[in-house]
Length: 475
Image (cartoon, rainbow, N blue to C red; front, side, top):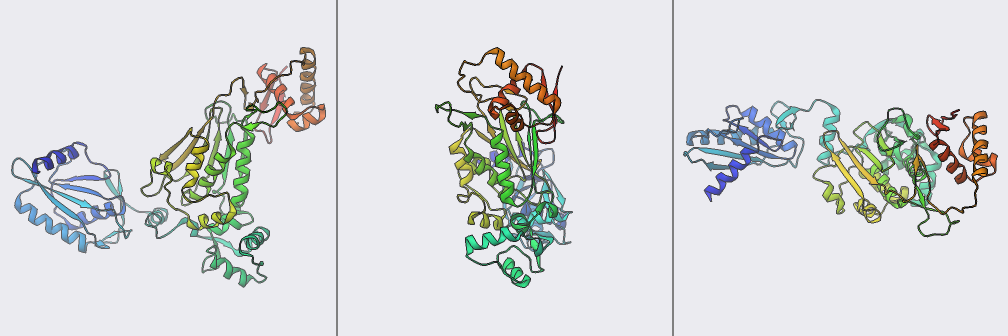
């Protein structure tokens, strides 16, 4: 038994120090030990191996050292950390007769933990660091389930509520009339956890029901870009838009952006039947709802929606909370980061099918989705991979729907149509495809196909985004 203990110990020492394991040759200062314990308790817990040097050598401890250090440990855990910690120690013998203490500090259940001087410590890799900002302190309270970002007070009063949107919600879900007086409205908003005791809207109230949330919290929008090819470009893009407003509007606009940038396929349907999107719309419904209600609103950043030829990326601020992993969310496990938002979304404000079911439903509809939990950059990314469609081409971001050609169009008539398009765009470079279709008596799809050919032949190019850019005829 003892020999196995030593083997296990040596294997752990060989791995070196990290965020869950620390070495100490000895302990001479109770306050220093208490700060190390607090850092582990405020993080994910860990083990301090006492009698092990930084380089991994094992000078060990004498029997007298064991008695003295165990007293240090007891005092540090009970009197020098607030709240007191319950820790475990184990003495592991070395071949030379000396000992190593394995001091295990559990993940704290009463975070945050302070040292005797009132300092909050966190693990930072193999080292530790002080919490020195309000944002970090809020996140620590959030992780301990004592505080949530969506209940943060804002500087917006209840007059910023979108009356029509809030009135419709009260009528449809609660069967209530919109309160006539400001005092009644405030009391109702407070009872619904949408306003603070001080009379201001909290973050959930702003995001769900404010008339212009982006004026109050401009960082909480969705930035969407359609890039040509498969790489991010600094200035070369096909379609871009920022989506703001209440969460429902942001969701609807973001979903519409994705769907208009997908291929449409016939999938065995008749030539005149409308094509189906290459990836089911339900996939993006689930992933966008997940991004909007589970993102970390303590991170002042936008959600980014990138569309490439071979994939769609939805990038949310904040890595997975607590002990969640990509493997766990694939099986349906979840953790509520923003409980107020979740409660209102479950009332029908967004398409929602139950906690933890969104990722599973998306994978059932489209298994080729990767999830990346990036702790270093504090990001969570869902990557939906697109399939290459047989016979399809994508030229500078204009998707060409594969279908059956009638074979009746002659090169002469095609050339005439191309000339008409080029002449029209020479006269009016900012014409949209629907405007072109109307002017030439064609379908939008027909104009898109002709423009794709003109761009492929090097006769036409797009300058700037779809909204606000223009066409340039190359002579």
